[in-house]
Each structure stands twice: as structure tokens, then as C-alpha cells.
Image 1 (cartoon, rainbow, N blue to C red):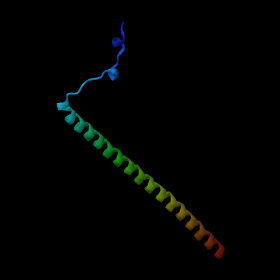
Image 2 (cartoon, one colour):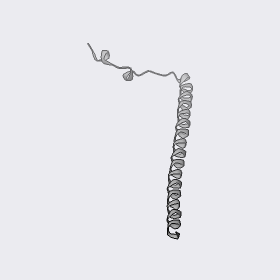
Image 3 (cartoon, one colour):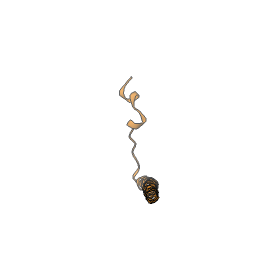
Image 4 (spheres, rainbow, N blue to C red):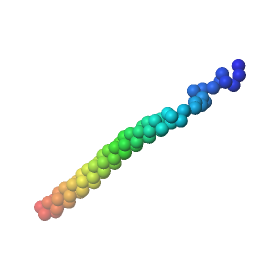
Length: 78
């Protein structure tokens, strides 16, 4: 067995004809742009969700604190 028999697909180098290079490059750029858009939308959605959850957490905490103050105020007035 020689070294050529141990090659994997990742080890194989091909020559791209110059006439096809531009087309392959355009396709590769399109894939990268599409992926970038998907990632951007996912990150924006996650940030929006986190923002909403943090806002709700703070709002609920404030509401509970106000209810406690109102209860204490009413109890002290009786």
C-alpha cells in the first residue's frame, strides 16, 4: 500500500478551470451571504427574546414590591 491509498476526500486537490472559477466563487459568496443573513436573524431574535424576558422579570419584581408596599401601608393604617 502506498501513500496515495491513504488519502481522504479532504486530502484530494482538484484544479478548477479558470473559466469555472468565477461561477464557483459567486456561488460560494451567495452561500456565505445566505448563511450570514440566517445567523443575523437568529441572533436578533435571541436578543429580542432576552430583552423581553428581562423586561418582564424586572416589571414583575417591581409590581410585587409595589404590592408589598401597598399591603404594608394598608396594614399600618389599620
